[in-house]
Length: 235
Ligand code: HPA
Image (cartoon, rainbow, N blue to C red; front, top):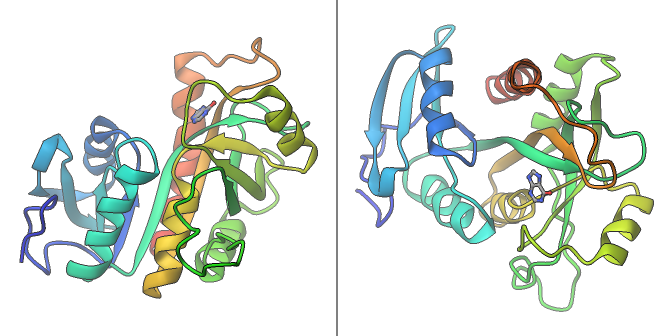
């Protein structure tokens, strides 16, 4: 049965879904990776595509921006469409020393300033962590590429107005990047006994605005994170 935000039928989705933030990127990923991609939902312009990648079923669907938007799509996919694993593919701002624009970050866990996971276990500061099966498959595929880092990120509710002291402290604590979705995805997957991972490309660095990538560089680096995400999704 269709849900309020996904006009598809059970069986229209593969067990594994790649989830970028941007619906246009979802369309490009589907075009690139899937044999005969089928548009299975298009509510609010959030296109969802299903096809085969090297003979294995795979879906691609955008989350929109921020934890509330991702939460709607991830929850409906997990509860109504037989989806077992969601791999977020997106960008993050670089935080910790040694993190550079163009690096790929596999998010082992996600701190957050959101209250979104507080309801999961009242009185406990919930650890929003990746699924080990997906994380280990991703890390194994990445091998010892020095530009691929595995560590924590922070999922913030606001894109604008990061408190400088807090961001500095998060960097000191080894937080590799700042983005806006992973903690909610990890919390939802834990709550529903499903699997989740975020594979992020560092698009810019919060403490070094000179780190800028050319459009070509952005695309190549994104391809690396996409390849890692696909390897995890189909592992
Ligand atoms: N903040 C939040 N999300 C992001 C950023 C950022 O600085 N860069 C890329 N995605």
